[in-house]
Length: 79
Picture 1 (tube, one colour):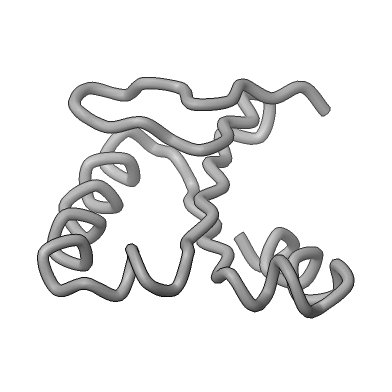
Picture 2 (cartoon, rainbow, N blue to C red; picture 1 turned 90 degrees about the horizontal axis):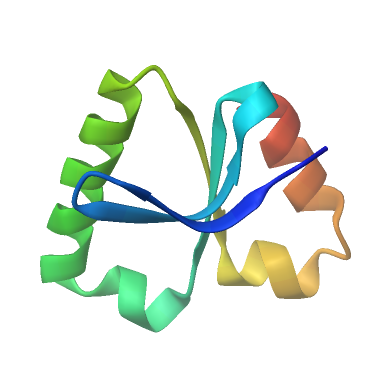
């Protein structure tokens, strides 16, 4: 499956964009993404991206680093 890293959509960048699936994958580090100002920004970003008909899969830091792929695959299938 082809993907684009750091794809720009309006004011926002997506970590990974899979065009054939209309899917965005966001990798959320625990510290940065837990700050209140960033939570609000990501809510606006999610609203904008879904208004474009895109699906979003957000993967937390622990899911990426500690699950050996199990949680990641589960999240991708759910998206």
